[in-house]
Image (cartoon, rainbow, N blue to C red):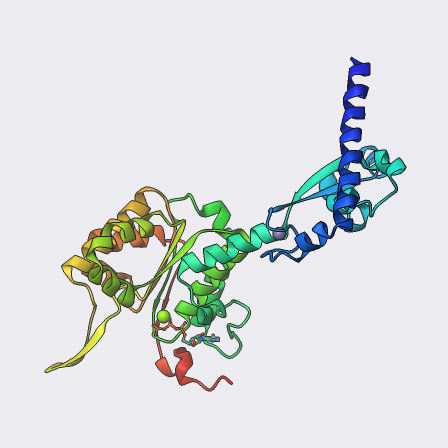
Amino acid sequence: MEARKTQDMDAAMKAILTKLRDRSAASSTGQAASEEKAEYECSDCKDKGIIVYRIHQDTERQLRKDHKTMESLAPDQMVREEDYLAGKVCLPDKAREWKTTFSKQCECVKRKKIARLMKASGITEEFEKLLFGNFIKDGKPDMIKDAYECAVEYYKDFQSIRGNRSNSIALLGQPGSGKTHLLTAIMNNLIKKKSIYCMYFPYVEGMGDLRNDFDQLETKLDAMRKAEVLFIDDLFKPVFATTMEGRIKKPRATEWQIEQIQSVVNYRYLNHKPLLISSELDTGELLDIDEALGSRIHQMCRDYTVIIKGDRMQLNHRLGDWE
Ligand SMILES: Nc1ncnc2c1ncn2[C@@H]1O[C@H](COP(=O)(O)OP(=O)(O)OP(=O)(O)O)[C@@H](O)[C@H]1O
Ligand SMILES: [Mg+2]
Ligand SMILES: [Zn+2]
């Protein structure tokens, strides 16, 4: 048994040494150099997604002694497989000392996944800049600070509450108070730090888009139902009409619009999928539009709801002097 193992190892080493010789022959004909020049999206792993390393037998022995895994190795404790095979690491007679290989996922895999998620989310470059870090709290009314705290808390709790009944957040009320800013900050963080598939749905434009592309309606609604996190921004955003009684606020909520939102929210409610909601309407006004829908949203957002109401001169960031 032991002899067999040794034989196998010898065969493996022979194969490596042959490869080494082939490689150095190839590099002398310039083949390797042209390979080097090929354009890769990731020059580090040459788009393979993994990087193979070799470690020295002494390093391996030390790791075992310390009960550590190869993941804990520092960059200078390992060499790249291609350098080893190209004979850059040691002379052929020392090759045996580097027989242990170790594969690691390249950083680009995560980077690409995040880029894909950002693209799929519908977040624009402008929105990518909306973060917790650039949200001003100093000099703001308590209500704004509450909204900030609520959003940060929600993000921190997310992994532990995402499957619960109350797993969503609603920031309601005053225009220009930072609702979109804070919910976008949550989304940016969920995508970039936790690789979560989020979808941004700006209510007014999104609804128009659904109406104009009827063939795709079910496909689009389905994407909204299934996204891990759905951000509905400015739900039922009201239009203002001047009537005999003065200026009145009229939510954009036709039967058709309510029905579409209903079918998305219902699915998400039943399947415990989180929602991020911003709206100028408060809980009561949402209930007035449709009680079944409003009460579901209320239940889903129960632990994380802030209603921002009061003096618009203080609450609307656009009306202040913050530069
Ligand atoms: N506390 C803040 N610190 C820094 N920027 C802020 C703050 N509050 C709001 N802003 C900025 O002000 C603008 C308006 O904020 P935002 O769009 O988030 O408000 P909103 O509550 O969603 O308003 P609306 O109802 O009009 O959609 C954005 O550019 C946002 O980045
Ligand atoms: Mg907004
Ligand atoms: Zn890579």
